[in-house]
Length: 210
Ligand SMILES: C[S@@+](CC[C@H](N)C(=O)[O-])C[C@H]1O[C@@H](n2cnc3c(N)ncnc32)[C@H](O)[C@@H]1O
Image 1: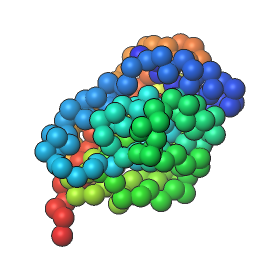
Image 2: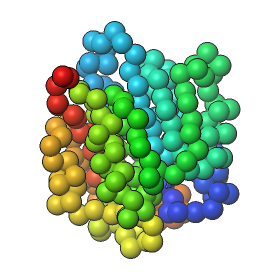
Image 3: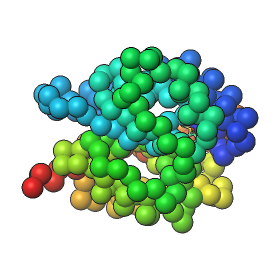
Image 4: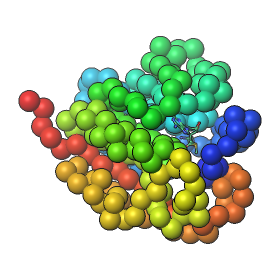
């Protein structure tokens, strides 16, 4: 499974999209969807907001499973790339928005999904974004995605956000922790070898509907 690149040019991101488009959907997405039994129980359509969808493989998987998807991406190249991959019969279930996640008001949804994208939010904008993600989760809704840890070799890069384990636990406070998996390993990124330190998260909003 290919992991990301540090912030790069549109050209580098486009190469990353072409490369990752050959990969299957992310394990975290499959794990999340398998976990959400209510996806199968509920008759109503489920909505997901995906932040930083990249090549769009996970958005395509959600669409295939009958979800309505709003995808938000800073790079227009990603939106064009995904646009070319969506089967015509599913295109009405997908809305793509080309915009940065900084300052975003996340629309109300059943799932906010952010695969290896939230660390690319600028540190000053992250607290408001996280608060908006939490507010967007409908009762029974979930967040799934990664945060990068403070021992990641990219830690210290300007405009990227990193968290200690304690900070991750604080961010999860008040949500139901379905999974917090800390990963620390030597490995590859699209731009070369690096030390990975990140948290896989599945968090639920267990508030009841009023
Ligand atoms: C590492 S890629 C992950 C892509 C995909 N989710 C995946 O798992 O392969 C991060 C994505 O976030 C997007 N991105 C980076 N910074 C962003 C920002 N500030 N706002 C919105 N999207 C951003 C990039 O364009 C890129 O497509």
